[in-house]
Amino acid sequence: MNDQVNSGPNGPAAAAGSSEHAGIGANGTAIHTEVVVIGAGPAGLFQVFELGLLGIKSHIIDSLPQPGGQCTELYPDKPIYDIPALPVCGARELIDRLMQQIRPFGAEFHLGEEAVQLERREDGRFRLVTSAGTVFDTGAVVVAAGVGSFQPRRLGLEDAAQFEGTQIHYRVKSAADFHGRKLVIFGGGDSALDWTLDLAPKASSIALVHRRPDFRGAPATAERVRALVAEGRLRFIEGLAHALQAEAGALKGVQVKAAGGELQLLDAEHLLVFFGLAPKLGPIAEWGLDLDRKAIRVDTEKFQSNIPGVFAIGDINTYPGKKKLILSSFHEAALAAFAIQHHLYPAKKQFLQYTTTSPAMQKRLGVTVTA
Image (cartoon, rainbow, N blue to C red; front, side, top):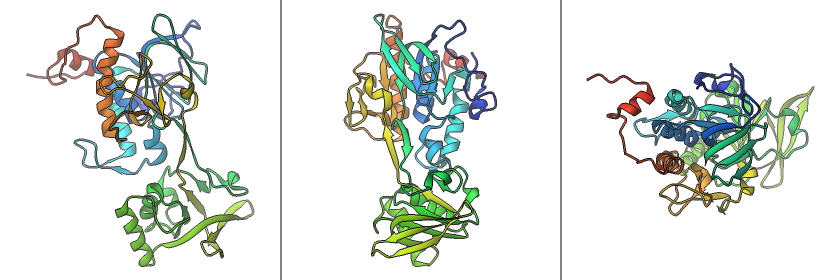
């Protein structure tokens, strides 16, 4: 089975071995599969790995056009320090490693598609339909959708929309695009502070605008930002965006209303806006799942929802003691895989096997172990 993605053979998932999108099956029928994983972030990708070790095939759906979820969408270059055995790992690097790790299992990707309908049939299997019309007949569903489908909170200024993606940005795809540029960054959370620190020594000029003097980011990061301000290497304004300044169809600056009411004009070639995300569960909220503050309640033995056969891992789930860490989602995926195996094949005896000694797992991984 080859990986299939709807982004074409040269799309972002091509590294996984892409081919043309499968639609709803060769004869117009639903795609029959053991498991559908909703979400191609770290949790969803590792779920594919854990299922693959048990010999279970998966299809993956994600509303984004490439694998990675929030990691690659929001902070692709941000370092992560709490992945076991990796002292430091960039978010994009983590996704690349996970994609490499699941390669032996031939998971099929359906990118740029949102899961919109889920129906549990009398036989216990599910009919799942995506926004692109892809239909699945699946034995189990894993929701690994992070905070759900999300959109950045936008800069609410007149004419802002015409500059979005060119001079107004809600995420950083390549930091090099902003080197030597006049920048104004809006926000006071981790993303705003992290990118301020990263770009301050590389920008032609840089200013940080936040509605209050206190920041929401990590205290140590906030202290480093304040140190830059004290050294005169960063301009900080307590205030709000007031109006854009444009000339000949190009953004030239932004007018900021400071806390005292005075207006200040800041030169800017690019605005980086980090007001956070507006998470939306979307159609998932209508599937009859037991929700608590937009999160799916699960047990901590199987990570199963109130609907038998529907599991949830990662930031989308909740249970007593829940910690929203990538590390936690890997643990959840491992236990969910065994629960899914039992759900699909209740008569099959389960044995805990190890990749270091199990010939079956090593064969699935495509590794050769010498004595």
